[in-house]
Image (cartoon, rainbow, N blue to C red; front, top):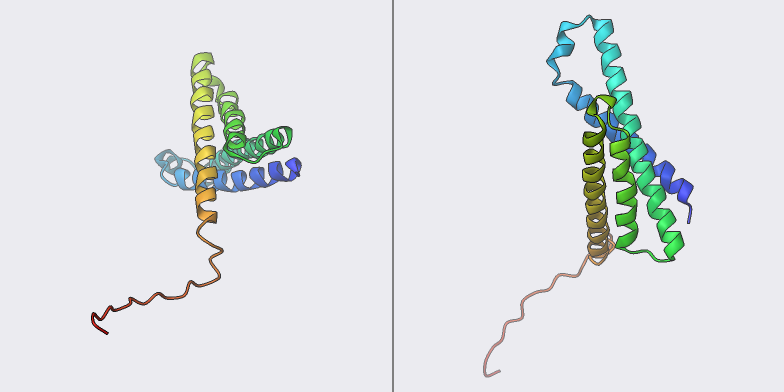
Length: 152
């Protein structure tokens, strides 16, 4: 298993998703309209970079922890995603803004751990059920109804 590769892939996807989501969220922020164009661009860039970094760290941690648990347990099942989600979600509390304070950051970490673990387990089962569908490239032959003619 290549845990470093899983961490890098997760961090890359996470950074892209974080930048995209924050870029969309920033477009609804009316306080940016009251700033000069230079100030607005700086504020947008800072927010997008911060979100990309945070989501990238969380997703990278998920990939690394999931792979590490799988290599320790020598099994690939939903528990790996659960432990990866707990590790990654607890990082949400660590990355909470300083203004959040201790109890609020702790609550964010707990909620994040449970939430990301739940999503990881759900993703595992979704992938498991989708692999049973088929490869998607081989068409299934059509099945025509058979008419039954009594007495023939």
